[in-house]
Image (cartoon, rainbow, N blue to C red):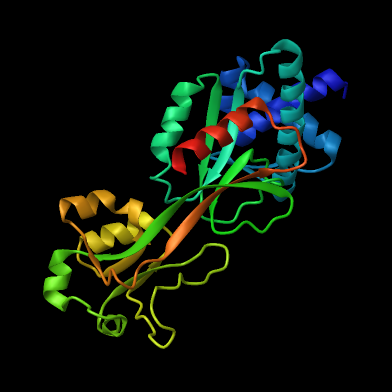
Length: 291
């Protein structure tokens, strides 16, 4: 393939990976779905691998496609940086910014909305997932994570803290009683969180000898909040996820003197590379508003 042809095909490949649709990619590019399909087929033939699983109803990346996607994103980012430096000496933030965030990101959503208003030339591509993504291999510009960063390939900035709390509905407590000390939880229905990456249950703020009963396990916050509001048990959740429910009285805190554990948000991005203006603006904007 000629180099200029290759660039166009790579951009088409990334767009198909983003939309998971030949039809939608064709619409965005002003060509037919058949033309998109032929371009991808030529790319696969050139590389000698299949990049997408295709069926009559769906398109999905293969493992090789996911690896190639990360490399393509980095190459296109470098091209975007070079173009920006040559055509826009002011360094105005622009382009697509891919950010991975945990599912429980309600604390950050207003900040993201404000960022869109402040930087209209930056297109946010937000991926909400509690799994531990590989920022570099999966081609993200930045990732928001809870807890101390442990990847030496990434730069990190501490951007804020949050409290966790134990909550239940007034109706549930009227029916089952209000726990006064951690050992009382042995008589209660407890709604647990399982970490998607490790499969382990989140540790509650109780002594090790208190083995917390398990009434339900899931891997997101909204389910536990909903179940707690409907009187299914006690949940251990980030305070910002239940702030409205606590204010309205739908949920009430329990064992407050024991549940004083705080979590820390970190913003991570690939180190060792020149920061694109869009990423620098994002890191500064989020950091200033959450600290």
